[in-house]
Length: 90
Length: 144
Image (cartoon, rainbow over all chains, first blue to last red; front, side):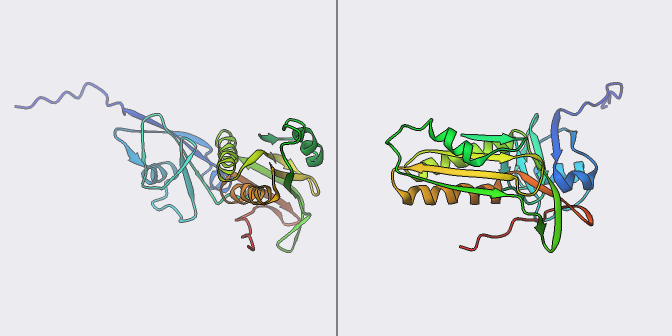
């Protein structure tokens, strides 16, 4: 017989800091938020959770800990993930 | 050296000041690029602009492209200064400069700094036009 203890509340193990910039910040209405999850996820999966959009437009850039990465890159506990539109400085 | 400025800067004064930090007699060429704000874009009058950036990543990226330029060419030094925040027409947005013993390296490095900055540094322009505010969607491609 398996005893299941429901008395303990589940606490996600990982916390990811997510940032949106420029037009993406305005579209999502969010500049910063924290996403909680149990196991490593890709930047694309973080995008899906944080933006509530299933697909990431092709021109969106993403960075983990301030380094450009592909959307398939894995995100780890404590990482900062940023999403932004094409850059227009200079 | 890289720097972000949230107020008006004079690129010519910046060049002169920074050049004094480079060993005299060791450089024979300085090439620079200054980008300033136009009062028009895509057929509209632009009265003001706001430059957003990603604090931390922007500085890190600008330092990276300076380091890359110094690896690619024999430079005495290089400089990038970029405005952030609210900007008015005719104010300087960006200065890139490279010092080297001979002109080829300084021309190539200066070009590299501004092109890498425009293609990859996390800045975003929002223009204020007679029709309201709008984000600039992308930078124009280089013609060379």
